[in-house]
Length: 131
Image 1 (tube, one colour):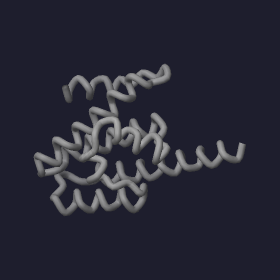
Image 2: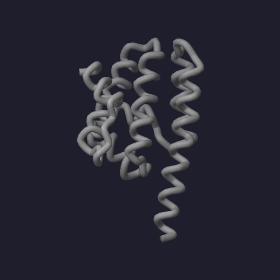
Image 3: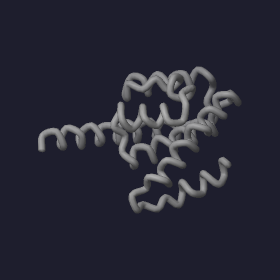
Image 4: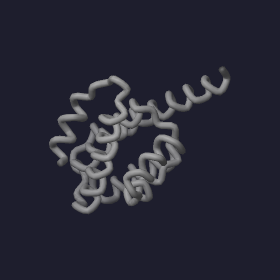
């Protein structure tokens, strides 16, 4: 029982961090390369997630990193996918934008296949858009 509480607290903590990161994104227009670097540093500090390494990883490795190492729930993956998608649309760097959209698509595809009965209409729409 104590182990379950520990996992739930960790999942809740990740959810709060993702919400704060999403708030940072929604308050700005376009991001300069320095602002993207700052956002990536925030991911490293708050989530202990090297976003640059994550973006360059294979599809399966990246998902394993989030799910197994960082204990992301499907809800957290949903939010993180949206963060990557939004960040991609606000960055000036086309290469960075491509990596971010590719990772968002990987997360969205995983959510559709592992939905556990949850229908994500926004995810289905974005998958169609990104393909």
